[in-house]
Image 1: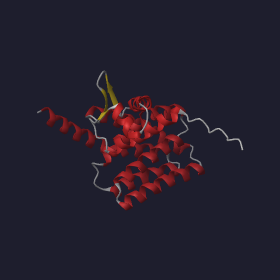
Image 2: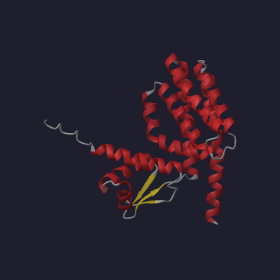
Image 3: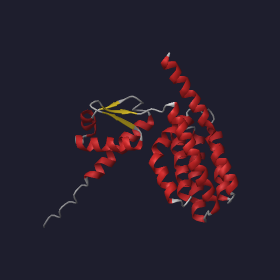
Image 4: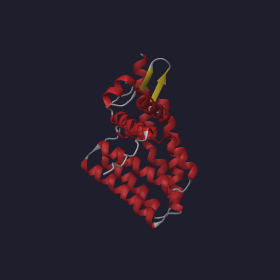
Length: 227
């Protein structure tokens, strides 16, 4: 019997897989800020070519999780107080607009989508899992952006979403009460699904209340390093 030729592997898929692995290691803290990312070491660890690793690192650089230095390779980025301020203000603007637009034209299918995302947050808070809560938090806000129906808003959010994910993880780490985080999201989802656009926009703006706390914390850390 004649053997059927196997489907060729798409090299780009390996780039994506490598970027996924490294991204999760960065966001989980396994690769903390300042960690050097050397192509030869990563290619040996992941059993991939250096070219594939190079493409993955370029993607993470584009996402703002990695910084490339000429002749020195790549390093994992951290959040500075300026980074936190920019992400706080940008996130507040994008997500409050998305919440208003979603509430104005909410559909039964979108209600189900948001309620399912909310349940994941509630369950994570109940289990006391910080990492699961951060992932669920990010997923809910992605869902709200999707429900906005605003293509250009979605494109702009996509550009910074991994940095926003890092911001959410850092911000939630300063918040001692998981139940309060869950309750804030519950209020937001209820406002959107009930079609109350004004309230949804207001809650989305207030939802970023931990932003100033994170900025202040990072400013103190930077001040300590400079002394």
